[in-house]
Length: 158
Image (cartoon, rainbow, N blue to C red; front, side, top):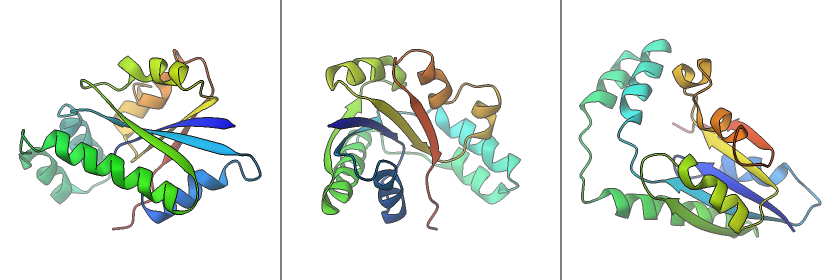
């Protein structure tokens, strides 16, 4: 079985599920969906990305948004559960994990080793500021997880 650790930021939509499951057609594949824990520091980076893409209204919303601190774990669990369910709905073998703390890379290597993963796929929205400086999750993961890392952009269905 070919095991993929799939690092996500938001619920997988139908297009994302079809995309990641089509990458290794004909190979029995299982997914370990990983959702980062609390990521408040990403708000500023997302706002900068929105400014870079001339989405000024969205940039203002990114900064003004005040998340409910008690709802973070619940929302993360719902996001993870929905993503795992979306993969399972099309017949994929999938489980999920959240990462404690702010940076999933602190535990990503352990998750890869624990599941004897063959590959990591980082499926996120574009984060141009981080990517330019190679500080995005995929660039950083390539340096320490010990398996191939593929960077993909999530489909925008808005």
